[in-house]
Image (tube, rainbow, N blue to C red):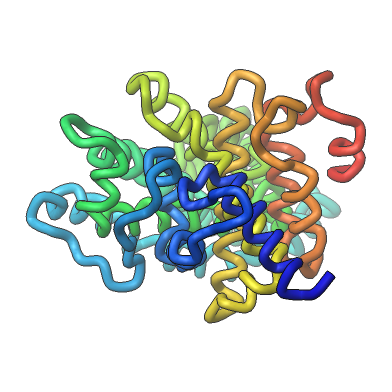
Length: 359
């Protein structure tokens, strides 16, 4: 079979799985494929209507500017997003106080080492507090954004077309969320530092020793932060919970029936050389990988039977293979997100092959 024939069949399969109305038997309309291959249309597949009727607008993630109708919500979300890069920078540079903590534990009677460890940990806990509080701000921003993009009288599809700046912000939130969790999952110092902080704070209270660091993080906040950092991917858990609540409170939000299509689009783009070669940079590859995993987890949390059942519309074997075909260091956080933050992986309806692939 010639390469051209193979490409044509692959493209036909892609269009058929999308339910694109441009697919007709042995023929297809390249214009439909071309619009979906553009980076700007990735978020477009969140709505089923366009997959049935064919896309008729372009989501300009690079240059979209808010209209007057969008501006209020856009400005509120932008206040949060403008701090996102700084949060990632702080997390990436987080080194922890492992040495000071080990010295203090090994020499429990050396007051100088105890004070040195405490002085090293307190400012780090201040950073962890900032990360946690940002997750709460991100949740509020997402709720407002989803409300704006799904409110009546317009459908979510119409909102995406008319309010492209808000659609761009939704993509940025998802991209930030998964990037944050990748960094957190590869940094055990975060939980070690916070555990030491809580143990030391408890011991100080018992001995009636003034704890200067408690002014930064009181006991109630420490409990909430502990639950947050206990999650394998805390930002994605926050996003999933917020989305699930939004879907529950707003029946008919199309993410319930259409997130699997986003996963399919990303998978095919990543595994097909003809499509992947159109990406302008490797950053687009990273973006697609994160979006694919993110929508799988959202689908698994929101859908009653999840993403791993045989009846699931998501090709989980194909998606996992795409992840494992990447450089290991670049996707281990994403694989761990599938292992530890999905709801249905260990269900009886999940095939042994999928469980083995994620071991």
